[in-house]
Length: 144
Image 1: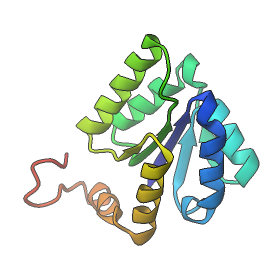
Image 2 (image 1 turned 90 degrees about the vertical axis):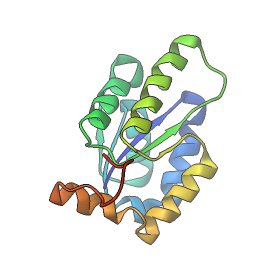
Image 3 (image 1 turned 60 degrees about the horizontal axis):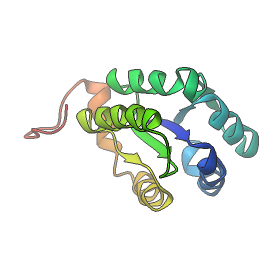
């Protein structure tokens, strides 16, 4: 699976600790992140992670484009709940894309823990099968 990571400055350390705790599961997938977040994760965990531009220089837009092109299967976006209207607009657009393309997204640690346990159990294997075959789930009106 293709997994993307983003985090506000006040949540980067929490995301890094999450990755440390779940390094084994994450190592089985293709990972990407905005520059600063990716560097922290890679330096701390040793995970192979593709680093995009920093969030405020277009990294968030790179992730959005990958979501639009169905190249991201999961998004971990650890955000600090108090931020500017400018930041809020960009994240609203990103979350809208996740809704549009049915990309599970975790914006806090508890949701991330639920998603990672689900990933570990193989609950998302159908996404890889559908992507490999180019087929949609039968009888599904919500999967695109």
